[in-house]
Image (cartoon, rainbow, N blue to C red; front, side, top):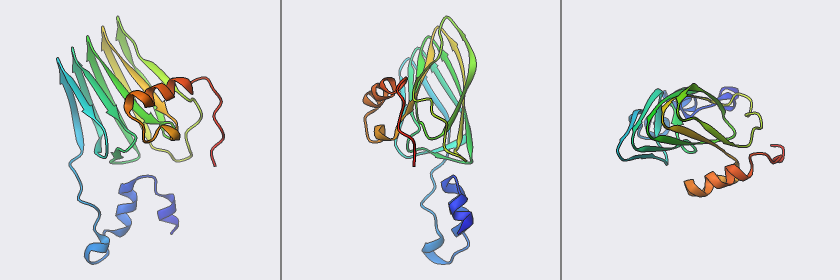
Amino acid sequence: MSVALAARTRGELGALTRDLPGNAGRTAERRKAVRWMIAVMGGSHRRGRYRLNRAVNVIAVMGGDEIDLRDAEFEGSQVTLTVVSIMSGANIYVPDTIEVEVSGFSLMGGDNEYGATRPPRPGAPLVRIRSYNLMGGSSIYRLPPHARGLALKEAGRVAKTTERRELPARD
């Protein structure tokens, strides 16, 4: 029980039931983990339930990436997104309950972060965003829990309105 309660990812929970006989021990059909997201003169959209590899490369050339991490499954306790934008950008939506580190370099562009700046929950997964931009940039939206079922555009608006406002303490 203590191992199950301490688990931070679905993978850690799945490890507890792998040795059970029959269907009870089977985890859901595992999808192949995403390693690349590419948008060239168009758009790349990734949302819903999908698995992310520990290292994901995101490339946008005169196009854009929409990456929604609200329902994504991580391979481990952290994932690194290396985002390269040339004359384009990426919108990345993350729940504000996980830890986010943003780094990188921009030339004639930049990154923007929106949303609440409250500390992540203890033991939360880590998303490292390494953003490299040439005439483009990334927008990172830290979404509060009440933005869970909203469309991406509306969730982005919610993140912008909660940016400087004090949110209620978590239970």
